Length: 187
Image (tube, rainbow, N blue to C red; front, side, top):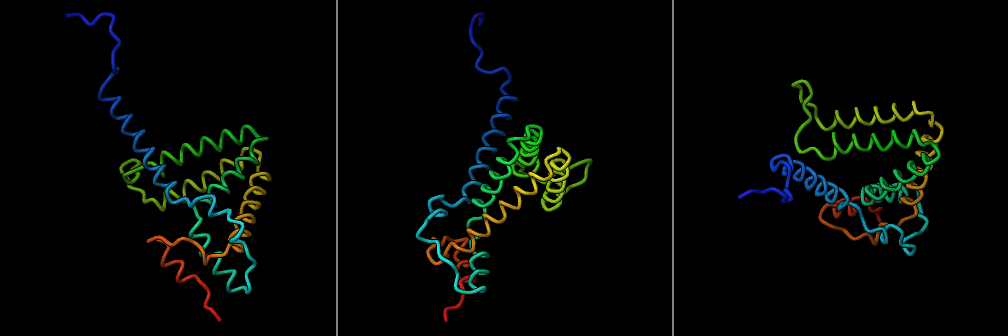
C-alpha cells in the first residue's frame, strides 16, 4: 500500500520528541519558578501599608518582604529596566538576547554546565552571566538609562518593602520560619 498523498505526522520522531521534551521541561521550569511568585493582590494590598515605628521594625520588614516577595520584586525590576530600554531598540534587543542566554544556560538546565570537559557550578554560571549581562548592556550606549532604571527599581522595591506590614502575610512551609524570625519583638 502506498502512502502517496498522505500528510506525515512528524518529520523525525526522535528529533521531535527531544525538542518537545525540552519545550515541556522549559515550561515546567518556568511554571515552577513563577510558582514562587506571590499573588499580585497580596503585594498591592492597600490595607497592609503602614509606616514602621522604628528602624529595627523597618529592617525586619525589608528582610521579610524581600524574601517573601522576591520573585515579584524581580519581575517589577525587570519590567522597569525593560520599559527604560523601549527608547533604545539596540539595547532592548541585546537585553532580550541576554534573557534567552540566561534561560538556556541558567534557568532551564537540569545538569551542571560542562564546557571543554570542565564542570561549572551554578554559582559560577550566575556570576559570569551577571557580569556578562551588565558588560554587554553597558556597551550598547544606554548606560545612563540602565543605571537609572536599576536605581528606580531599587527605590520602588525598598519603599514597598518598608511600608508593607508583615503581620498579615500568609505563611507557608518555606516562609513560616522566616516570618517568625524576622518579626520585631513586641514591646
